[in-house]
Amino acid sequence: MLDMKWVREHAAETEEALRSRDSSINLAPLLDLDRKRREAITEAERLKAEQNRLGKEIPARKKAGESVEPLLAELSRIKEEQQAALTHQRELEDTFEEIARALPNIPHESVPRSLDKRDNVVVREHGAKPEFGFPFKNHLEIGETLGIFDFERGVKIAASGFPVYVGDGCRLERALINFLLDRNHAAGYKMIGLPYLVNRETGYTSGQIPKFSEQMYHVAADDLFIIPTAEIALGGYHREEILPASDLPLRYTAYTACFRREAGTYGAEERGLVRTHQFNKVEIFSLTTPETSYEELERIRGQAEHLVEELGLHFRTTLLVTGDLGQGAAKTYDIEVWLPGQDRYYEVSSCSNCEAYQARRGNIRYRPTATSKPEFVHTLNGSALATSRLMIAILECNQREDGSVRIPEALRGYMGGQEALAPPSGG
Image 1 (spheres, rainbow, N blue to C red):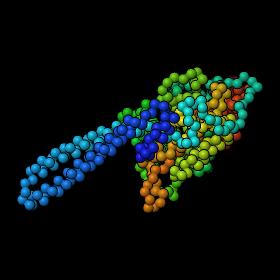
Image 2: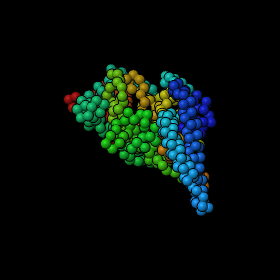
Image 3: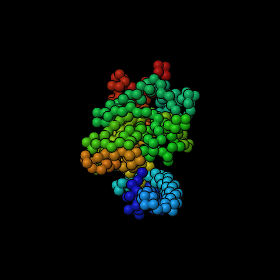
Image 4: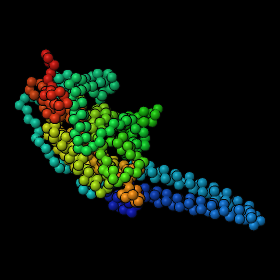
């Protein structure tokens, strides 16, 4: 949520920045509601003060032997007016909050202004696209040869988009998860185990609710939402807390399964593990002071890039334009690996600085000094990394002509020294 004092004082500048994300944004209705809301607050407070004044005057009149009937009638009228004013104030505040909480974050000044994601800026490339001296296969074909996926039984168990990993496929992904967690821990991110379901307040803190609640699986009986990313739960971890400045930055890493309804249909190139309803991901999350948050963003980006480098994969890092930013992000880098079977790059990490947007929604604050007024922290997040698309990249980029797949050296220690995935005997 935005700082309304800032929006009020910099209305034209704020609207211009937000329209670089969404050209339909018009702040006039919100600012008009804000004015009426503040006027209603003033009127309700005036009536309450008048009510208190009359309440004190009545005993004095009685003591003096004067009639209090006119005052009682006046007090009754003021009470009714004050209740009506409070009702009007609440109605205005509810409407105001509904509009205000739907606004996206203000983009950072360093973010390129464009509504077209094709204008995203490549800021780094690492390695080269793999070359094959034989007809290469996509991950579905490789998975069938190796017997490591069972998509048909996933449909039987649940529905399309819920893959089953089998044997070495399951071992390879588990190796990836452990590798990512260990590397993040070594880089100073504290491991944390999280619930997979969150309440409405936690979903609101992240910015996921209410705007994107339809994309989340919902347990209606308990009004709990299944997380689409660990970022949601991590964002709620310090909700409604005031943190000592000496504790900042706080850095966390968490593995969770992630669940997304992903409304819409996708082409044949996004079959298999490319886009699923359930997938696994390791997340990193930081809470910092405002002064250090952009330095922290580069740290998160560097950690995610280093992980992909260790896996020996070709990737590029892009700086997203304003029109491609997520709801709560002020600045985002995407790290994309090359998938030969899809003949394109796909995101495996998104690293964002949300500044105070989430902290304001979740009331997460810190005290710069022991005696100072609490201020909002800045929150940052990054995938480190999403394993399903990493699985695709590892399988497709490390395939051999004999049908086997070379296991990246960084993962071999997690697989008992195994160097390759090989087709079953007779396969």
